[in-house]
Amino acid sequence: WAKIEPRIAIPVDIRARDHEQLLVGFLSEVVFLFDARRFLLGRVDGLEIEEATPIRDPQGSTDTPGALLVDAASRFRLTARFLGDAFSEQTAIHGAVKAVTYSEMKIERCAPGAGTVVQVVVDM
Image (cartoon, rainbow, N blue to C red):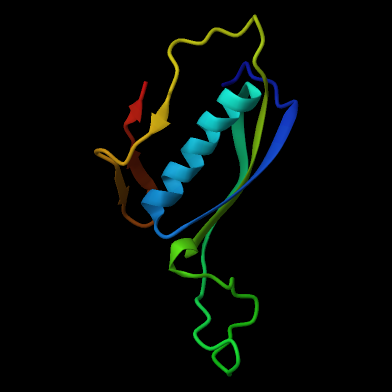
């Protein structure tokens, strides 16, 4: 990763019903960008995950100012910026990811302030 120059910036906006779907969408975007645009990810900046506050009654007083108007399929939103460079002949690639799977996926929150442990299995 340290060798990939941040010459290209790509905004990312993913919506999902839960954290697992959000993670698969995020990683699938990395796979797609490599396959379709030969983009090599060097780092991720400004990653934010927000949970939408569903608006129960768009006509009434239960509206939440600034809330995301969502349905159950897009309750979570991840925004970020991918920084990287285009694939070149100097780049060595060892294997290729075909798809991200839900198989054996784990997202475990640790103690407050200790982060999150994520396990993902990919098809190669």
